[in-house]
Image (cartoon, rainbow, N blue to C red; front, side, top):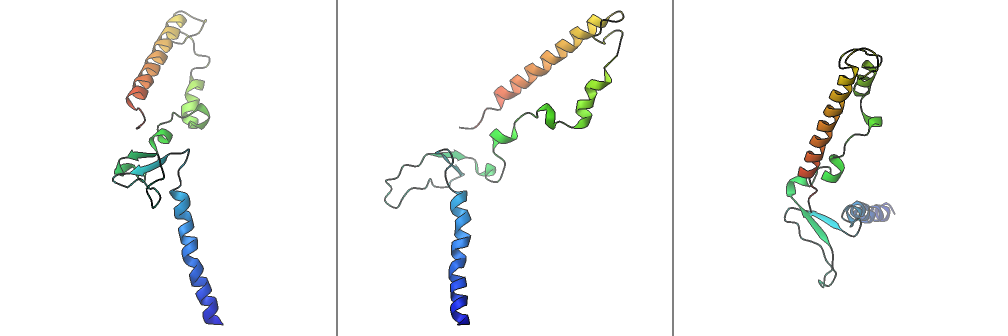
Length: 133
């Protein structure tokens, strides 16, 4: 009786090991991503059409580029970065961007120029980091 139970348990082991492999290799959104020189899978007759996207072998165990190159929303930035805005609240004088004191307008222009440069730099980086086909 013990041998029968042991054989039944051993017989089920390969099924539980194979299940995650099937889910891992399943196509998502109708496209299967393959890496390096892997072969695009098809049925035994070669009649099934599978759309595959080939990526370099170095990318196999990395987070996909379209997920890792996203900018952080303000809600997910660190407290120290968010607190930088609070440091300039109530500032007056040259470079402060306030209506109080001389030179407040100069600060508004400087901040606007800095913001524009930052946006242009981000736009250039986004154009250079196009997703792989």
